[in-house]
Image (cartoon, rainbow over all chains, first blue to last red; front, side, top):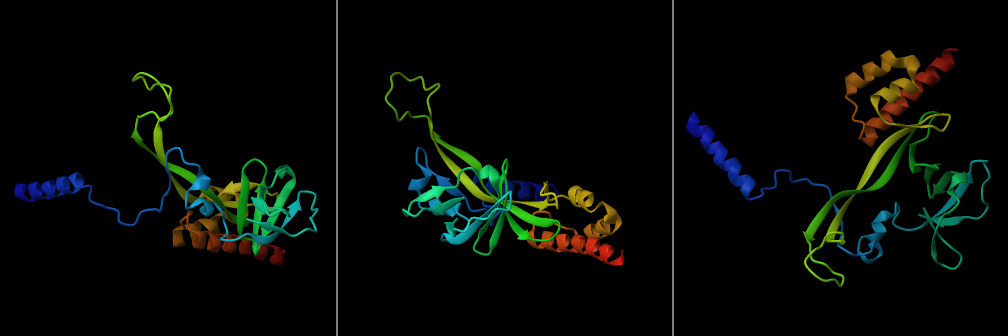
Length: 73
Length: 155
């Protein structure tokens, strides 16, 4: 019984020591390297909601709408 | 929120205090002056919206070496080199008829539909709603709005 726990403990310690990826599915991180401006990184367009600018409209609190169609993102 | 100006430059929208809604393509964004833009996911009397954020998750210190000219070994007060890791995040909100924003939680949905607490509690227990799941929240918001609509029909 004690031997079984000992074996498990050793395996667990080995996993921890080797930085074993317990959670395979991880979130995707966007890395901004030190002293780098966001405009200089390859993923800078990821901050936009849409892949391209799309036609859109702005409606104001007074319900006024601009006639002009804008390309928004 | 950015737009392409007549000159072709990418410009930022200013004077946002007066903006209520922005339609981009088929998507509507509700605007709150203090907290920003919310993408409307489901447009009903009590709507469901999501706030897309760019969250700073981690700062990775590489070393304490100085990159600017300086003397000595004291690095106190100097900017150190570090990498920043960001993650795209989503938080869900309910927007009521008064355009007030409420974070999507079980307490808030019960407050917003206070006349139907028993039925909503039953629904929450039955379906184990995950308040970070868009699909779960769409179903919940539709269900709750339907309760109000049914009550109005009866009256």
